[in-house]
Length: 396
Image 1 (tube, rainbow, N blue to C red):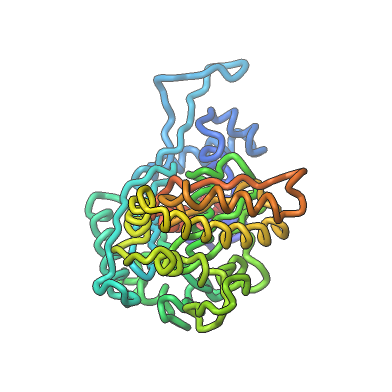
Image 2 (image 1 turned 135 degrees about the vertical axis):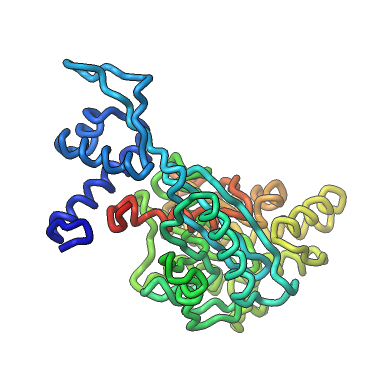
């Protein structure tokens, strides 16, 4: 028997149907019960039961002041996805900072916070992440919110269990059971999973950012490391081992450049944040965006810096051409430090992309700059934290 007293099979179907209604409201907007039945293919009586249950937990509301005609009979009442007190918590840990974003069921951002690591230039321990996560979650709960789940975005490979960081060379982590550490800090009251930061940022771009209008996109991080999130037909492409998107370690960079992973010639050793700083002869600031903004300010008056950024754009374009030839994205989104430097880097990258990709005359992917800022990965992680609610795997 399920916790609700229904047979297990019946409970599973109920959750799946609930998830179907929630997805319809999130993707297509408010609708009457009759319209929801038509959208989802569920019986109107089933939809009515689900809407009643969701209203009872504050996930939806029915607007009695704005009835709409829905055929014969009395006008229907629009059902709206609200869920303002039901949150997913997204976290990110990176070399320079930790970040947190919380969103509600309707996708509204409720909390955004970033903290630099305690010692600039040193890989973070889990201390900074745990402190931020527990502070944010405690504050949310004290204000009457329910945090359903948490997801942590990390710049590295994540094991199949979605709980263990297998390899994150820029953090110096390998085999770290990060989900268990956070759950312990939460008192085992908030289930937690781990995902790659580029995957999370790609989810954020697809749901909140500049890739909302396409089904096939490629997101490229711009921090110390370079990773990709690949969205095909609206779904993340993860690969056979879950490691798809580790493009920063493709051997297409300067063959003499040493990467953080210890190898020579990795792409990120030519186009990552620190490679860019070496090229322009400037120092790193507290976050990648602050660093890039300082470089952009210098580039406005320094021809040598502009030339170095143009050369970086050429290296970037060669890698993007390789990826585009294989993945055929409609849009390539550049995130992180690339955004403030877009006017200096994108023209060169676009020119190389158009020159190198075989299908350029038929279809040339459009390069777009992210508008989500440094919190893209944490925002996508928050979306991921709510994913099981929308599939029905987690009951409200």
